[in-house]
Every structure is written in structure tokens, then in C-alpha cells.
Image (tube, rainbow, N blue to C red; front, side, top):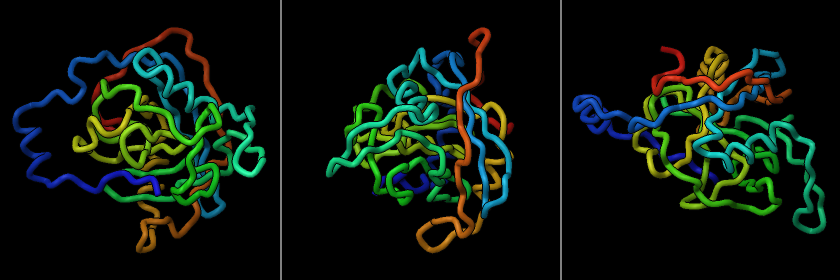
Length: 220
């Protein structure tokens, strides 16, 4: 199962803040491309999350993500099965308040599904240039080094202990209220939302000119 590691001890986070650690290490976060996901919770439409993507920093990772966003590619999979690479109708299957929401398992919707744009299970970590700067950053869920597939997560708090373990490739530009709705949705003992959180639509948005975003939480 794809796992995002549990919370960092508060003393560690406090120490990082105390020394004023720059979590992005002076990397300029240029939004080169944009994408969106429209979300329903328990069958009720809740809104749209818009992402700004750092394709100048993580081009391969962004390309993989956009393959599932666009959703027009199919690949041969196990036992001769054909799989459409699309996030539509997949779910956010795991949510942990004050940590992250995780989804994008297009195969099984439970965290065990791995597939990438090439039709294989995994691709390597591209780089760790962007750090986990707070709520609203989107990264690749994995089950260890160089095991990226289709699953993603969105942070809902400062998660510096994930640095150098997960590839961050974008930031929420709009729709953090929807992210918070997902985060607040009650879960079972396995962190699975009680009310199903589904991606009902997704796609790309135009970028007239690249623009900078701050290495700060998306909702302030």
C-alpha cells in the first residue's frame, strides 16, 4: 500500500520554525502549467481544486500527472487488460487531519494501485528541490524510494519530515476550501473517508504567462 509517513514530532517542527529554515531553499516556484479537479463528497458536488504546476523544476513528474488529468491515453496492463490513464472517477481514499489527503489510485482506489504514464508500475524520484512548505502543496505518494506511480497527496499542514522522501510538483492556487472539506470528512480506523470523496472531472487550464508563487501555505 502506498503510504505517506505519519506526523513529525511537534518538537522537530518547532525547532525548524525557530531557526527560520527556508523550506524551499530559495527555489523559485514558477507556475508553468495549471490543472484542476472537481470533487464530490458523498455524491454531492463540492467544488474545484486548481493546481499550479512546477514543470520547469519537475517536468517528468508534471507530465505524468497531466497524463492522468487529460485522461486520453490507454495502456496494456496485467493479464492483457487495457487501462485508461485518467483520474476521473478515482477517489481520495485516505485523509488524516492536520497532515494530508491522498488519492489518485486509478486501479483500486485503496492505495495499492501503481501505474504511471508509461504503463509500468513505478518511475524514479525526479528531484527534491521543492520542500514541504505548508498546506496546499501537491506531491507524489510512494512506498519508498523511486516508487512513484499515479497516486498523489495534498498537504494540509507543515510536513517538513517528508522532505527528501516525496517529490513536490505543484501548489493549490484555488480551492483550499474544498481540500479542507475533504480533510474534515470523518474517516474509519484506517483513515478511509466515511463519505466517498470522488474526482468527478479534471482537466488542464491555460497559462498565458508563467508566474511565481510563494513557498507559503496556500490558505494563508
